[in-house]
Each structure stands twice: as C-alpha cells, then as structure tokens.
Length: 547
Image (cartoon, rainbow, N blue to C red; front, top):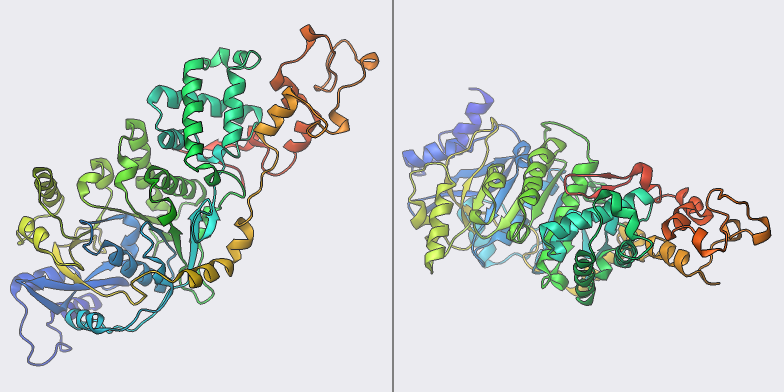
C-alpha cells in the first residue's frame, strides 16, 4: 500500500488502526473524509459532522503548502471566528511559519500563554479526537501609534502614499488625484513627508503665490481642492490620528521572524484602543501587506508559507472603495502568493469581499450565519453559492451550526477544492482569552523591538525645511555653510543656491531656496533623504526606500 493510500485509509477509518468494534462510517462521510487524507504536512481543523454526529475518525485538515493560496474565515458575531484564527495560528507557529493577527477586540493576546484545562475543553477534545495539551506561542505585541498595549507601529506619510491616505481621509477621486500630484512633487523635490504637519506644509506652499507655479506645468492644484485636503487633515488630526504617522517607521520584515527554537513568531497587532477608527486600522493593515509585497523576493510554490496574514474586519477595507483601489487589492492578493505570503480575510459573509478577490481565496471556513432580515436571507443564499456542490443542505446547515462549528472546504495538495465538510473544530491549546494587562506590558517591554520603535523621532523634514526657507530665525537658520553671502561678495548670478541678492525682484522662490540650500544638500546625504533618486511606489502608491 502506498503512503497516500495508507493516509487515506487511516482518515476514512478503513485502516487496521481503526478501533475494533467501532461503527463503520456512512458512505457519504467516507467520501468526504477521503478528500482530506493528505500525505504531507497539514493543519488539523477538527472532525467531520454527519447527520448530527461528530465522527472523530474523519479528520478535516488543510495542507500546509496550500496556506499561501489565501483563505476566508467568515461568520456572524459570536460564532467562533476568533478561536478559529487562534487554532490555525498556533499550529502554523509550531510548523515554523510566522503569523500576523489583528486583535480588534483584545482577546487574541492569550495566544502567548498556555491554555487552561477545563470541562468544556476536555469535552470538545474528546468529541473531535484531539489529544489536548496546553501550550503558548512565541509572540510579539504591537499597537498602532503606540496607542494601547504594544510596540508602536508607525508609518511615514511618504511611505503610506496618496492612495491609502485618500481612503483614510475619505477623499473623492478628483481629490485623490490631486493628493497624488502633491506626493509626486514632494518626491521629486526631496521634501520628505514624515508626519502630517509635513503634508500640511507642502499643500499650503503649493497654493501660495510662490508655490503655485511649481505645479502649473503638470496640471496645478486648485485652491478649493487644497482646502478640502487641508480640512480633512485638520479633522483627522483632531480625532487623535497624528501618532500613527512618523518615525521610526515600522519595518514589516519584523513580521517574518522565527523564534530561536524554530517556531514561527505570532505578531499580534492590538487594536482595541483604535477600534472606533475602523477605516484607519483596516487601511493600515493594507499598508503592511503592500509593504511586504514590495520587499519580499519571489519564491514560487514553497513547502510552507513565509507568513500567513489574517486581515480582520475585511469588509471595512472594501467599503466605498474606488474601482482602482479594488483592482490594486486584487492584484496584490493574486501576486503576493508567489512571495510565500498567505492572506486570510476575516469578515461576516463572503458577500463582504468583492468577487475578484473572493476568487483568489481557495480555503474557506464558514461559521454560522443568521437570517433575521430579508438582507440576511440574501446574504445566506449568496454564501451557499460560493461553495462547491455537496450532499448537505447548506442553507439549513449554516443557520444551525453551533459555536465552534463551521462549513469547510480547502485546496488539496493537488490544488483542487476538497469536498464540503461540516466540521466541529478543535480547541486551541493556548489561552482562550486576553492576557492580563501586567503580563502584556511585560511582554512588550522585554521585546527587542521595543528599543527600536518605542521612542518617536521628529527629525528635520518638509515642514522644517519650508518653514526655515520662508521665515528664517536664529533657532531655525541653516548652518553657516548655507547662509547667504554678504551683499558685497554676491556675484550677479547664483551658484548652487548659496548666493541670494537682497533685491526682491531677484529673490529665488521658496522651493529653490530649499532645494538649492547647503542645508538640503547636507541632509540629502543622510539615510532616508535621497528620495529623489531612490523612491519607488507600489501598486497602492506606497513608497519604500532601499534598506
């Protein structure tokens, strides 16, 4: 008997290992279980449920190499989606695969601690044939802008880019294009946008008398549009958003680390402190994904993923998104698979995810749905249509699933969809609840990443350069090497922007002073200011410098 046949017979209960005297599985259950009998490494999801009975001999699994083919975890609130993420994350970590989890409600941090045995855990383990032992994962905790418990995660405005920022600011298509023009100008002139005040300074300059001419040849920036952008930025800052933008910028390469014992690190982004800002955190998650896409090399089909990224509250990313934005998401999801990254979108129904993106999600774990309204009923019917044909009445099944149960279909080792299986899921081995605040703070402060990212840095950037050029003062004046030459020594022409005749009619423009100054030349030699030569932008307009 071949290895594949042995694995298949063991999963379907026909192998000698099957307990003596145990009842034979129904033929339909045998056929479903055979579709999940994989010869290679796989994650154990749970046991097949057939005709109301849980069949521990029919194990439902997902092949490890197929985790980079993306997936969907969906279901109504309270149906067990979070525990499913935890179950998958801890098994990936054990297999040496790093994981990223967005913790919206604050109850995923327990993945770092061993679980607590109890009657419910024991009962579930017995039902699904699981040998349950407690165990935690190596974990890092992050927080957007340092708001909440976690190592601060920041991005510069320059790297965040105009497309994602437009979505956060809720700009329309015309305003988004104008913001793109502003970013283009800043990129070309070396005016790095580190934080929001830098962007405000550049926008204000480009509608000033001196700055208006700078964009005249490439379309210009209307005062009305600039006003909308500035008002949006003001409202954005008033909501406490400034801490998310700045330096040191988070290196998404941190997400692909493994622990010294070979297990994958589980990176948990703690979001409870910003859960009232859903558009912001969903867009920040997309920035992380776009940044990974930009930096990681091509690996093709690997034995296991380099990273599995769980994108929680996914419907927020797609709500009111432009066609171009959706096309960028689709292309990123399609191409990042070859870089070894698997993406799981987590939401309530497949209907929340656009069809072109949904078509890329080969692994599905669908928890229960509720149909209390006509719209709920439509969503239920639409969900059923996303699954392959099966012997189940899926409309009835999806409304009757209990907590910790789901309808599953994944990609087999050959890349073909497996049969639809109603599954009672295993219990996570880690703590099913949050760590206490003290333990979480200790874990954060002991992290090597804390020293790299904890302290915000406000270095010289576009705001300081434009301010210094327009209103020099003793505190902000450039160093002596860039100071204006005395009038008696000033030649008729200008040389490198150092010589500035005092006559107003010959005064260079503000940007000419900035770009041509010795201060700018010196700053351009430092790390992170050579944007004019090194900046590149990805599908989402995100920018990365060479590391």
